[in-house]
Length: 366
Image (cartoon, rainbow, N blue to C red; front, side, top):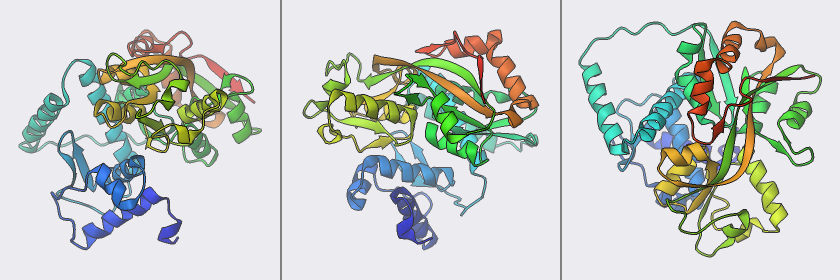
């Protein structure tokens, strides 16, 4: 495939890889800040963030709060284990979420992790062999799912759960192509005013599929503390000088937003920042926390984790979509049993803005 045929974020990532191979970028070098790199490539900040995330998943760069993104000291091109790397990234995100919720600052967390890493480097530790089986998750970003992935060894001894967050639509497509065992989706259908069922029937016709409800959760505006712009509805996003951070096309959040934006009569070009995209709810919250945006659309739990304000807009259902052939496997049955157990119910309910009333319920789609 010609480079020009690739999405722009992959072209940018490949350009950085090329500079590493040619020695123009060396271990420890800092990449351009996201904003200046966006100006260099004449693209959105979200595109650069996605390129840097791609490089991070390849093990080529690392980012630290307040210190920017740097080339790692032992780059490898490539190691062909994206699922394993993605699992580790999202385990780290779950730890970060728990720590932020516990009141620790990013600087305190970074210092603690570095101290722990120094101690482990000083010891020769033989790690146990990883489980043989890997459950491949693909779909929409969810904080409960991230927590489950990082604690899956306590849920099932038969597998590890490796999540890749590509949006609800991307997850269902991965399921149809046999590239995922579980898809995570919260796609709202305007015609039926229901979640996921219509999309599953369109994309997996004739297949028997289980929709396992993970949770209901509140979606709304993530805003600075106190909601200084006094945002209450989508109509308020057209305020001058108000910068918005959007979610990527294909995500359930973006599908919901675009439909309701159309209902208000607003055009995308009336919203400053509509073209800027975040790949996860946590990234959306981070953009607001770092004042790169005044508002973003995301989960109440993400706003809470970053100490931000939140304006509730809709209560949505998030389902795990699982083919019948996979549903009866031991790891999936362990997961379903855990969701309806007391520990599972408590874990879901502990997240701000999450409702476990229907967690673990199963709906079969023929």
